[in-house]
Amino acid sequence: MPGAERAAVARECCAMFASIDPGWLRDSMALEGSTESVDASKKHYLFVSALHGSLLSIARTLERDDEAQGDAATRADGSVVHSFPTPLPTLPGVTGEIWCSKTGVPAAASPGDGCSGAEVCLVLGAGNTDFLGLRDCVQRLFCHGECVLLKHHPLRPFLSAPAAHIFAPLLARGCFAQIMDPGDVAQIRGMVQHPLVGHVAVTGGAGTHLAVAAAQRAVGRQDSLSSELGCVTPWIFIPDEPSAETPGWNNASVSFAARNLAAVKLDNGGHNCNSPQVVILPSGWGHTDAFLAALRGALSELPAIPPYYPGSFQRADAAARAAEACSGASVERIPTSAGHDFALVALGEAPAADATLAPWVRERGAVLREEAFGPLLVVLSLPSASPTSYMDASARLCNEHIFGSLSCVLLVPSTIAQEQLDRSLVAPLQYGAVAVNLWSAFNYLFPEGTWGAFPGRFSPAAPSTEADGVGSGNGVVGNALALDGVQKSVLRAELASPVTDMSGRPPARVFSALAAGVTHSHRKGSRGSAYAVVAALAALVTGGPAAKAGSGPS
Image (cartoon, rainbow, N blue to C red; front, side):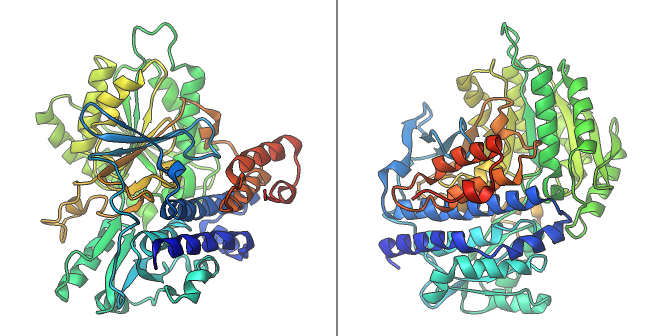
């Protein structure tokens, strides 16, 4: 389809969100063991935000809406940063950036071509989150111009109904089809190897990538696979600048950070590719004890769901036991509100010298080199003679020793200047998404942003047998602007900003109002996103019903 037609079809798909049957939400809640109405409303909002936002951003790009491009500035090293003052209108105060290694201009007049007209892209749907497989379809359909066959994950067959509804305009044009998982590995391998499958897109684990690559090589194919895979996600806590008169870290901000971290870790049972796994603290930090005490309390008190992803609890428990056998390590098992134990692993201080750091990490590879994807969190510390040296050491540890390059989170007090932070940490970090003072999941929801491994970290020379070579994959979703040389998306918020709080539980009507506003934002000239914020605040303050708040702008 030409760009103008693709833009029109994307807006047609956007219009379908207002009439989705909510039945699939009940099945999703049942899978994850949740019955709270607020959880269902939150799920609906995230589903709408991730998919509708992506479709709308693509439509605007295809229509060459100049407002969608963001302001661009060139850094001293020649890289280009596109800035977006309101990347997520439902999160006021959060700013966004796209960092590009080259010119940062659109790579083509419209998103690039994909498979030939006689071929299709096979999308292997993810099993851990409702919107991932459908977002992959949006990427391949609109950004690569491919016809798509979606194979649903066996955990989430109920997504066939909303997929059929949202993509009805594509179904009518013969561009989209979907099938259930056949439950037979040989049949799936046959699909991957079919001569009419020109590309395979995967969101999942390294094992899936390796299996698909092996199946393709068996029939003489190369380079027809893209993947967004896992990561041992670090959260790096930055100390205050010692000379600051008023420190940014205090009892309130430490407690906020601990509860927010716990809530994010407990989200979806820990079955997220951006779920925190390694917490990096500065050695001798005066708030360490208070932080760990608050973290323990939050992990035991905040709402949790039982681990439902196959093998996740056993994998996390085995990793904790392996770490416990290491010198200086200890494991605390914390009972959660869902009734299962959560493993909090303390590794102590990592060596400062590179010569001793590498073997130290290798010995603890079960928790630093393998994604747990479940109820496990690791805490370690790094020497911190100064904030700058600590940030330099954190970047080296994450880039060179911790598995993956998908996303990371930085907890940064106001006493650290942005220029200093960017020079010492944001710029050198080799991660596809960097989130400052908020969860990196919001980077995924940033419509103009990108989500995928840092470019260059995938090792095509030996990805067929080693998970380390595959890393966090070789694919990217997002980049609706088709910018050249994209390296990473960066989101920024103030430390302990209420809009980034994941530990609170707003009433269901708030999420319903937000979803309603986003749903209507595809209409040209719509005030949908701004309306969503106002409606959500009104629903929170007045207690008005979600239906009234979500009637939508014209």
